[in-house]
Image (cartoon, rainbow, N blue to C red; front, top):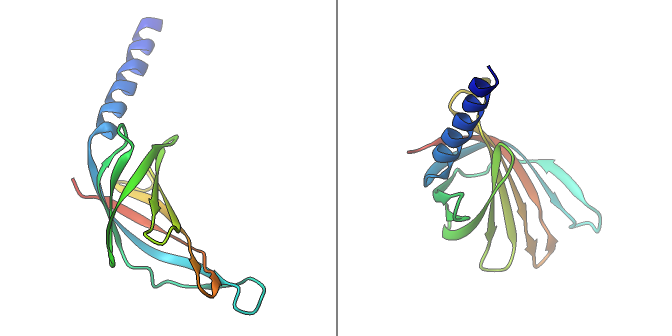
Length: 140
């Protein structure tokens, strides 16, 4: 009995590692967001649902790299493995940092991957951070 359970655990680890170690691509759609500005000298946040879709391509969790494809072009990104998720770090040409976490789906989400995308932007007028939530679909 104990050997059978141990075999199932080892097999599960090998299968999950193999599935999520391959290069993957995702199309992410965001339907809820919030942006904050300091135009008045204090932080003011408001809802914003106008985030364009993002495609993450060639995501290789084992090698820690991939590509971000957005409405203004594409960039190389760093990828870090999390617990039932992975994190994507994009450094923009102007030095700003965008962080995206894609969570592995559960039965509740079927084949959709919950996602959170945070932008840490500093404009000439001051900080302009935002955070969006949505779902990603695996493309391959």
